[in-house]
Image 1 (cartoon, rainbow, N blue to C red):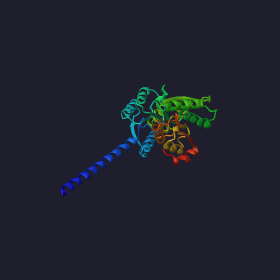
Image 2: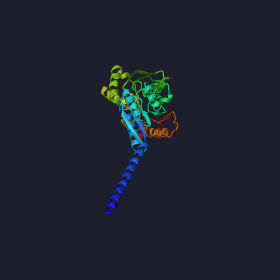
Image 3: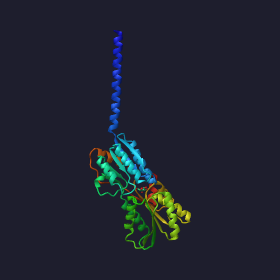
Image 4: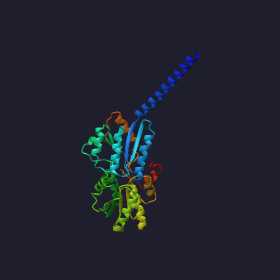
Length: 326
Ligand code: AHR
């Protein structure tokens, strides 16, 4: 009788243990299933701005218990971004997001995402596609407006009567950030007969190329250069080094305006080496996560979730320095 009782007790204990176990694993898998999985294909790490954007997206996802991030770094190559998107499709993520390195060439892979029923969000850069339904929304800045703001700063600085020779450092060829910042700037100086872009070349949004290309500009144009317009701060910061090495004073002999508003640009403004930075907000993590949640909830998103941005120069830049987040 005692043996029967012991056997019974063991059986009951085993059953309880199994029940507990399976409930635990059921809970764990349900919790995992309930997470929204976002696949994000980043361009690379070409600038301080890009690093800040990556951190914003990673941190926002890491701090949100309802979200899981699958992150991929394309190292500036479109083919790597396409591969990453295909992987996300194969992994059946809930939402695909990416910052397109260039504007063209996305139709095939985005059609694959659409056929798989996975919504796509563009983060910070736009694309050119005939079928607008290949993406749900674009989260980011108005690059044309940024170019116009850079031009406005120069017109306010020099006025209309002075001859102004400008050299331009462009971003990555084919990237919306480069194309639109060029377009906006050209529109901004259109009415100024004495403003001329005497040199314009890509420096791929990097500090090292910014230095290299500025050296070439200085070699060919030397003291004729009144202004440097750079499509991002990193290229301007590289160019500042080139100008100093050439023996001119950046911020005085050559007036410099760039775009992004990274902390290093504020340091350069404080030091009198950079004259103006047009802000472009990289802290897009919270908007991305909210947009992904809304999509999963079946909501329709605005076509363009626009960033609010400012222009910094002089005392305004110095006052803002301490509160800059990136
Ligand atoms: O797409 C945004 C641009 O890309 C930023 O201005 C630049 O710094 C980055 O690399």
